[in-house]
Amino acid sequence: MMGLFKEELAALRPELAQGVRCLFTEREGGVSSGPWGGVDGIMGLNVATHVGDNAGCVNMNRQIVAQLTPQMPRWMTQVHSTAVIDAESVESDACEADAQVSMTPGVVCAVQVADCLPVLIAEANGKAVAAVHAGWRSLAGGIVEATIDRLRERLGDPQAQFKAWLGPRIGKAEFEVGEEVKQVFEAKYPDVLEAIAPSAEADKYLVDLGAYAVHALARSGVDAVEDCGLSTYADAKRFYSYRRDGDRSGRHAALIWIE
Image 1 (spheres, rainbow, N blue to C red):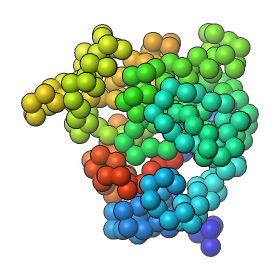
Image 2 (cartoon, rainbow, N blue to C red):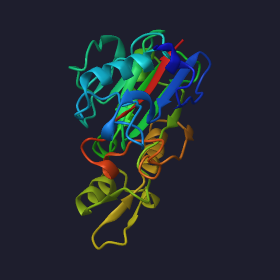
Image 3 (tube, rainbow, N blue to C red):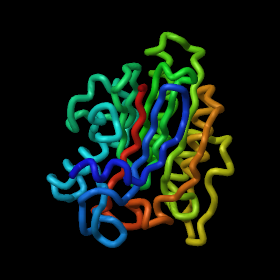
């Protein structure tokens, strides 16, 4: 039965480096229902255990995803921090961090996202990989830069070069924030003027997470960046969205590993 899902699973599969595989799951293709289902309320591929979905369904969804990877992804609990962890040490969801790095073939770095920005990173020759959960707090806190630093530390090469992929996230047209968030980004990235703009609503602003991530990567010497440009909020059929659907929104898996 499980094999029925493998070939038909809708997912994005960006290519970053030779010997590196990436996967971003879409909303449909699993066994969850209700708000965690597809847009019609059935067959959802929610991989998160903390959003109210049936635990058995989440486990089955994770097993479905694992069919497409060399081993079970290293699921963890994300806390909107700047903590970066070696994926090899992640043994259960009890681990709390917002980015994983690996140099071990077959170890699958994993982050879960709904509207937050997933950033997948690979060393140019496929020697190391990372998955980053870049919500606005983590992004403004420096999670991208911290991840690149950890990759270079593990590689033992401060000049190591990387390629990055920016996955689906809430789009600039939908990510409305208040003055306090605007001030945080302006303090962290004062020279990135194009990434924030006034909203139609008074004292509200529209933030472009992707633009800030590109700048964060550039700060760390990473200029080879591919942006899928897709909005989770704008496409309910393909994607879950916390901002659109509330606390019971499902989560996608953003995965990367060395073959």
